[in-house]
Image (cartoon, rainbow, N blue to C red):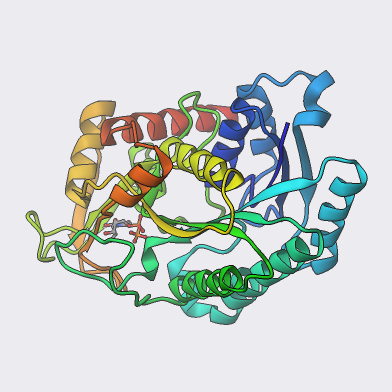
Amino acid sequence: MKKILVTGGLGFIGSHICVSLIEKNYSICIIDSLINSSEDNLLSIKKICNLSNNFLEDRITFFKGDIKNKRFLKHIFKKAIDDKKPIEAVIHLAGLKSVNESTEEPLTYWETNVVGTLNLLEAMQIYNCKNIVFSSSATIYRPTINELLTENSDLGPISPYGTTKLTIEKMLEDLAKSKKNDLNIINLRYFNPVGAHISGLLGENPKGKPNNLFPILLKVASGEYKKLSIFGADWPTHDGTCIRDYIHVMDLAEAHISALNFILNSSSVFINLNIGTGIGKSVLEVVETFMKVNKCEFEYSFVSRRQGDSPYLVADNRLALSTLNWKPQKSLNDMCIDAWKWKITSKNKFK
Ligand code: UDP
């Protein structure tokens, strides 16, 4: 059974990936600082995967810690070797992810995302771990209008968050070029991951005030917020609201498994892949779909554009489809239904 390190493994995306990894018979080691996630997710992962206590140790271990801490990272790799179960690959998700916050605290973003990744890569080098799937982002592209983004589209992030993601990609590219290291690297450029695990036990639960559409939508639909503000009705799109490529978090998780299988069976690979559905939906379409499939109604109004938004961000995902032998399975309906199920379940749980 191959052992995979998942950094940030208890976050929204990480926890769903952990479920997929266990289902595919990997053994996982999770590290997470818990600054934007909760240890409850560990219980949910175990529950979903039906892991009985006897086998837990073999399948899933968790260490609380920060990728800014080099000693901590080295300890994880060394311990795995000492236990005769070395880490064969890393899925690297740990990092800060708020576009807004990154404009206010750029150095914090550079330190956690860039320095944290540097620490991780150093530890991997010392302990001879050669495989990494990195969680990158579509925010590294220069905004365009009505054009699908390919992996060769112009780069030009407009936030410090996006710049840190691009910087990490460059760092990985330099490593890939240095023959001595012989690494396998896949950068997955996520579009807009939303939805939740179908069980209702895992989903997106940001600490503090949410900034993204789905977590806000869930608060509005559940009555926690009075109404949804839609940022801009005057964008150059068919209904005036911004268009995004929303992808179900379980489809995204499956993309990681495919990427992992790919690098574990390759040598000296460096690939960038867009992970989206290739289908754009406007904010209004998301709102209407959500109300329809969940049979609920809520108030919304149009306000001025949000700074830093771009009208259209949709993936050309053909390279991912052909390289990974992967295909997103879930529709916007599924994303809305599963997200709402998660909201209802978690609301009851924390009552
Ligand atoms: N959005 C909105 N109201 C909100 C939050 C988001 O209209 O309260 C819009 C936002 O302007 C963007 C889309 O929803 O067009 C997706 O935003 P999100 O922050 O989820 O992701 P982004 O694509 O900006 O990373």
